Length: 511
Image 1 (cartoon, rainbow, N blue to C red):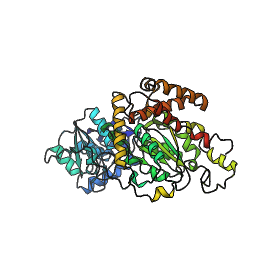
Image 2: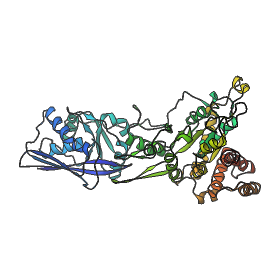
Image 3: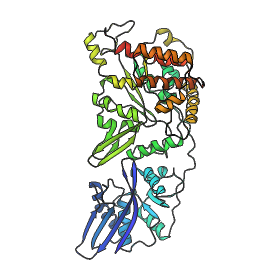
Image 4: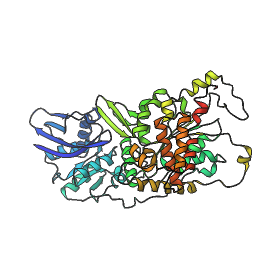
């Protein structure tokens, strides 16, 4: 007796169609599972066996062979328990009804309960692409499964619900979430908490508006971390496509917060400086997204930037340029999206007080140079905005005047980002920082005065071609904040001042 049912699988970020075949034949009792399964998939034999017996169903005392096709792709995870069980019940004629129009995803407990699995959203997207009309998923994944339209998603708690639906005894209502409109996101922090630091706030506003990378250099206690932790409060609202992309990554990683159907706020990741290069970029025996992919469409904040392992910092060079990270392992090559905004913070020297107006630096010039050299030139060149965060004076800290709130800053950021979305409509580019060279040439139109200043600065400062492009893109963002069609002299001048800090700290022979 033979039966087959549909299922789905995940490799990297991409889902693929799976067919689970079951053959029950005469011979010594045996349960074989083939199709390049990993250890977790092989263990499904025992979970299925126990589920059948504990649910008072008949486990065939025959030779059982289950094939999970295609056999050339390694199958990972516990999500094949449910389709293996359904295929076996159909082959043993214990399940009445047609299963051709269904796909099955789910892990089984020993008593027949269907448990939550990771990666449901990308698998449902693949099911919709392959025109599978209905998919059974675990009940605990129902919010994630309610995101899509055009496909019936049936959340089930146990195998009896699946059997009754297929046989027509008791139908399950598909899950639909009609309340996926933008929700109000509240934060416990606000930019109004930060006293002074007007220059740093302005730089972070530009970074948020255009998706630019930023590094902050300053002594301990000047407010670098405080500023960085408030960046999520001014980031522009996400489009539905961005929410879906981000949710796919978090679904595979199993990090969708309980009670949420979709990730609707931009991610903010803050890995510790002891993080490994593999944890940062992704990988492992079972390839999983790393911190830079979890920060896709959001921010990764790297505090104490020089203290990160050099391999970690250098591993970010290619993703910062291409917005993707390619991970090659023996099992295959996976590409994860990594369109993140890097915010880095660091001290100007090991003791932290080089250039401080009051406290004296105790580091030797050689120690300062070794410390600054931990941040390489290629990495620094890929960071658009370099800003010095100076110590806050007493008068600024003690004044009672109300500082500008995050809501006020975010209005300007949203307005500038809306201009960019209209500009790049129909392309894969989402913000000024991701413009291609052709787009930079087309949209970064300078006035004569602005062009003359940029030419003079390029020759005098010895800027690289990459720095030239980044200044143009940054000035385009500043012009968008001013709602100016052309890039004026003031816009170029402000962009140039954000590229001069390396002359003080990295290229200073007297350091």
